[in-house]
Length: 441
Image (tube, rainbow, N blue to C red; front, side):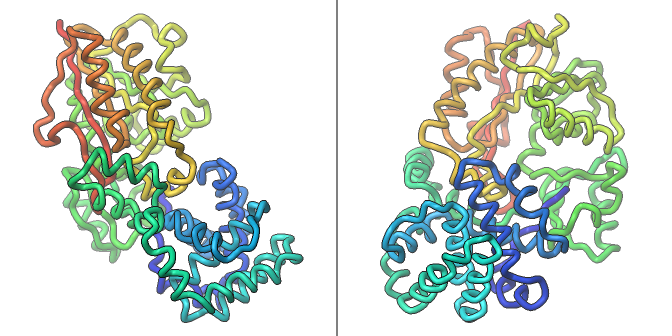
């Protein structure tokens, strides 16, 4: 299901306090943020944090508060370092202060209500003994706001809302574009859909949206950005597979692989199935979707059922073909490998908190193992499209250079409209890397 876009700062705060119990949203957001601070992904944290909120609008509000806090990254920690006499070890209380400070920074005109609601949230979270601390910290921030904001303004993690190591890496890799790359990662992502051209043209679907009062912009051959974002059940024919939610950059993969009639195709690391279904929509007739996580493999099957197209879904590890391969080679392989996801951080701001400096290298070793294994099941004359949603060269250009050095027979095929294979993130699409490699006949 598509998640709603973030609310602008002036749409949060006081309006929700009246209608949807702001303190409950603060509390749920704090629980989700606390789980992320503890090392859990937001995807895993949100169900436990939000399912106590009966009203879907309240759940959406809590998610917006959590995402705003995670997206801001450096500001609240820097402020709390100056506002607290000693560190807080209670992760939920710490997260509540971060959520409240993030909202106060965006909506100082509603300070009285927001502080009051944060105190109520502490009580609702079983932290009643800390209500005085919450009140004092937030009011102290308001009392010294200009001085505090000036003190943290030049901190890189506050300026660019990313960890210091991440900023240094992006700056070194993309010296001409690093600031734009970091800035776009702070923007709410568009709701981008892929029109299933088996059910009609992109323009015809755009007309269907317009008839329902939904605006959209063309982003690609089958890509539309729906504005404003809406839940997927409001998209015409979504349940019947007329469209799918997929970033415009991600939609490039199926076309770049260029499946031909009669070819046997492998979609490795296939979950959640967006690229799998796209390959089928573009004409693939014999496709194996490989996913090592059984729960995520089930999501691939669900997406296949929704679009009404067949594929063989296998639970297996791409680095271990002997455990799942039937001996028949593939003519085309989509290797959408695990990575840091540094190119999609605007959709998953928890990534900034979860990733560590050694992660690009750790993922690179796994990526190299996947490339070696999949090369062995690629047919002579076949091609493999290597894909990451990363902007770090260790996972992208350097990985392919290393693979080509180890496999001198491999041929790097041109991607004329993506120089070097790197799509840096923009307002219209996320960041991806693509490399098409041919195996001589």
